[in-house]
Length: 109
Image (cartoon, rainbow, N blue to C red; front, top):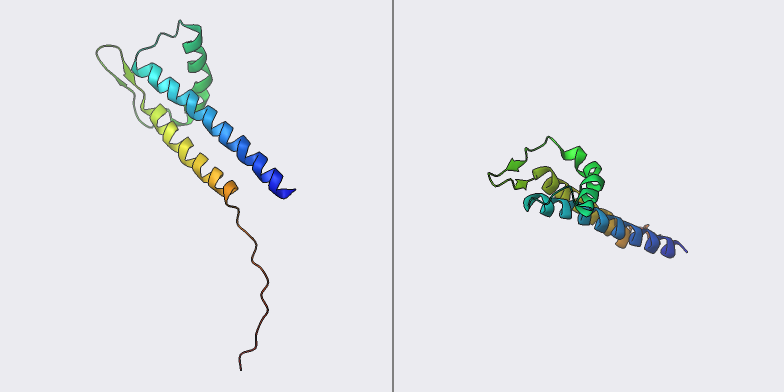
């Protein structure tokens, strides 16, 4: 029973990390290539990923190139941090800490 719960949590964690990385990754790519927010899909990505990169906004300035392309460093930082956190959460669920087994004690004389 406990194993089924752990596997369920593992699937949820992998899915959540995947969705976060996908949204932030698309945001970064769209910003680099100068995708217009007037497109419904691009606007949806920008809107839904804004709250994910908000904690990292201000850590590094975004680099705006002369051609209007933007390298958004907060998005890169968010990809890195969410990836690291996701890795450790997934590893923790994949390899749970087992409780020590009781061993018989022997007398040392």
